[in-house]
Image 1 (tube, one colour):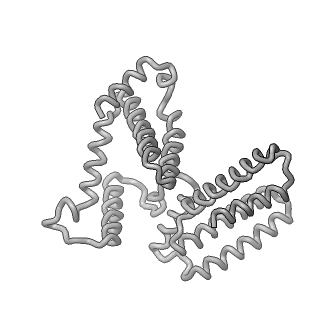
Image 2 (cartoon, rainbow, N blue to C red; image 1 turned 180 degrees about the vertical axis):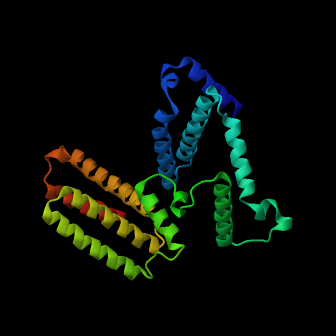
Length: 255
């Protein structure tokens, strides 16, 4: 770890690209690297997982180095902060004498209670939705729905949530006919939000489900491209019917 920090410091001193970076310019790379980790874990390729975790760690070290240069905090401060947080939020592990054993669900309740206490001590906002982390819209939507469901603002059943999807779909269809682009976008967002709610009721992560579909789509389209190459043509020269036929072949192979 010390060698990695030394390398990062040297890069900031001598590499033109690293020198011009700011905390703001690097945030997009942290997001990208997090997705690369997810993809590697999904693939199950151990070498790729190790490699991508290293890339993600680099983003933490890089950001810490820049804030160290501003005399705000350094990497060790980041490590100590997370150590203190983990101990503070796991009293059932680090304070067993004064804390009873908990189930996984009870641990989550205690974690949330301690987070709330920390917010109050800092004087943060009292809104429940402040706890929802910023990030991909699908994840935010599901976390918001999960959060408000804890106070009873939720559909009783999956069927009720599905009924909302049908209602929003009808409103989207009406908006499309109106040709009002702003209204179409608004209703389309409502449809997505309603579908995510159905997924949540079914204990499905919308983000994971969509990533799985994207992976599947990539794989099947690659099959079409390979078939086109074998036929000495390109997808641009193929008809939609030809590509659909190859898509069906790809589906059959997966079965």
